[in-house]
Image 1 (cartoon, one colour):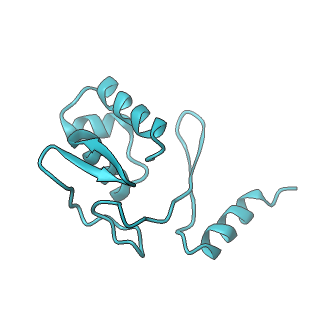
Image 2 (image 1 turned 120 degrees about the vertical axis):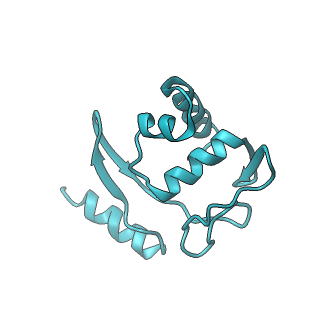
Length: 113
């Protein structure tokens, strides 16, 4: 009892992943990283860091799944700053907050993020 946070950190580090991040945004949020696979676009496969590159002019691929240009940009921004908020994403992309939420919901449903 009371060892869950320490266990998550230890297990992530043991798997070669960065430590999880913890934050409070309308509730408690834990971000646990995945290893990049060879189909990920713009990622250094050993560190998971973004190189800022996407495939194609209007769409990219991530984890073997096609995503639109806006979704690819969202993924890139989240890689750069995992703590980025929906209003910040919307402002950086020039879209509405509801548009950003819709993109994020779709990426979550596809298990990309």
